Image 1 (cartoon, rainbow over the protein chains, first blue to last red):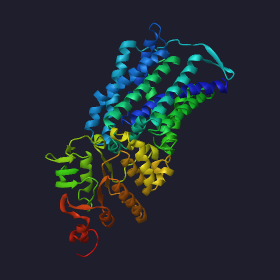
Image 2 (cartoon, chains in turn purple, brown):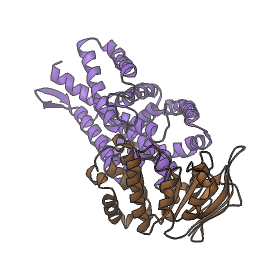
Image 3 (cartoon, each protein chain N blue to C red):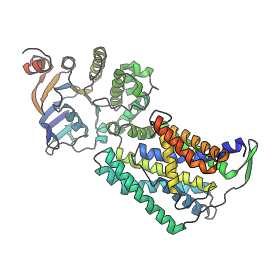
Image 4 (cartoon, rainbow over the protein chains, first blue to last red):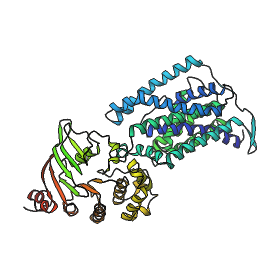
Length: 290
Length: 237
């Protein structure tokens, strides 16, 4: 592989990481829920995209219009019925953290079980625009380029929504200080539910994008949870642009390591970066929060 | 305008406020004096809905009952709180802090006018609109906090220890600004340990001791009150 090919492959992977990490950082930063079932929500969306694109006169792109709002609604319901009771009874942040980790850990297996029943344990994939495209003197599959463009477009759209509108600014204010958010008239309970739902919508977008160029399996969610978590911590918890940048960096590093060293070292490289960040920059590569 | 009747607040077995009665008239500036732990902050928090008072209480604004109203609905009633320690959104810019101050429905119509008033009051904020609020000096952060509260276009502005941790010169400037806010027709309910300067600003005051009102009167009367002179002004009665 040439350097350009590696770089493009890295950006495609990194764009996906960035997209899903933004969703996790919303859920953890604003709704204060550490969602261990996050990767399984991504996989669920991948399967949903797989089903929807096979419908008459549908494709994965038009499928986004169903899968992403579906993710939002699913996330909202999970928050209202499963998590909000925990939030209400938790006397402090630490208790909520433990309770939400245990609950979403359970949810992980429920989602996985349902997917196994519906789709089995085999690797699943579908063909979408698997045609070579020439770019910067190298050839790439069209579906990967679309995946990259989609990931960046959706990620930046959500970023603009959160930073350029009063409504989005209010969500970020809840991440900074829930108490003060109430004082200016923000309904923090609803803000948390919406943030969790938006995070799930981003997971759904990520899952659809992934399904366009990768194979996936019902039990593959945990890898995505881990990757998203690493990217969130690298970028700084609650920092949206940090998540975007850290996602791209991780994608490029992983692809470079697997191309020039050994594919078996990809995970090792990921965790080495993760440990280095935790040891030397625990507040994330980009410092400032939110 | 604001009337508190039989306000009691307890945290477990600890009684923070015990049957407090208090009123603020339209456009009036009222100060609550008291030592640490006298229950001053609990009083403001109870009005803001941040702590739940004991049953039997009545908190009314122009006859409208506020007890039991959720905290995020209080700005719509025309009451804003500048909390102790300022409580600004440190990671957001000055502009974003002010915009969030106008989040309530009540605030939207007069938003531009309020912003002009605030920038006229605190020209420093106009110069630093894009600065991250958490990187500003203590006095500037207090300006952000007061500006954010004013953006909700309140009829009653409550401030919890606004002078805390600020240099005397800065406190002087801040109280000049509070004077101008009061003169614009907004009622002020102030909790302060800096008795001298707050009795110059306020028309009336209450003296709070371990959760009970033990004295009330005009600022002039309170200045002469032996308890106030001894406890806060360091003077002999």
